[in-house]
Length: 296
Image (cartoon, rainbow, N blue to C red):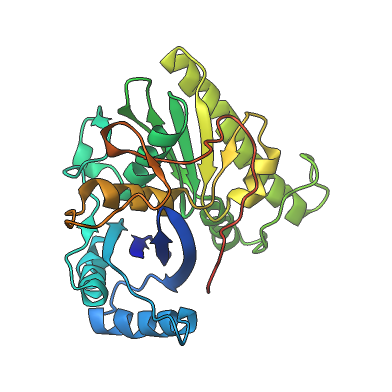
């Protein structure tokens, strides 16, 4: 099993991946002041909860992506503790299957690279990925596998929270999908503006991106808040809540030192240049697949 670590602004996601299949996902709070020992103590609890008495959990390697540099080293140390090996750390220097076509490749969020790499290897090009988290990010890969850049917007929950904090007469609102565009009370107006507004943002932005590319694009949406937004989008899309974890598995396969005598196929098919291929890609189709196992 591979240990995949996604260090985000709000949470740290831990994934167990075997033969390209996401076996579990668990989450911890992102705390910038925590030490490696403190993170390891929490990870021990998470893995103890997952462990089967007769089948101890073992990780043969690890891959890590981070948008919080202050704790990257601490989590990399944890990964090495559990695997006995240096983890693959996502950066523009590793093999992704993409050519970088942006002004400053090192400034691109590492999670964005992961999403784009997996989507480009498994869906028809050109492709747009949208990740709905603390920030809403769009990534664009053209027909030649060039990462062209994208869009960064305030996240759905970030915007709602800001309204509640900065506007004296507006309440904090629990997320949900609005039933209609025209709200009839403060809460429904805020949900319409935030949730439906994000769906309209995705539809409109993808249309503009397609115009600039000169062709239709495949749309893949992921992220913790996508389930509220994707039913309201009009552009054909695939919703894959495991996109980033599967992308980390791909980058591990492309970059981890290969051990002699070990097979990494595990029933999965690897396409040109070693790219991890899904058995059944789902271009331009709405899906509602949830992770196979979710912890925490």
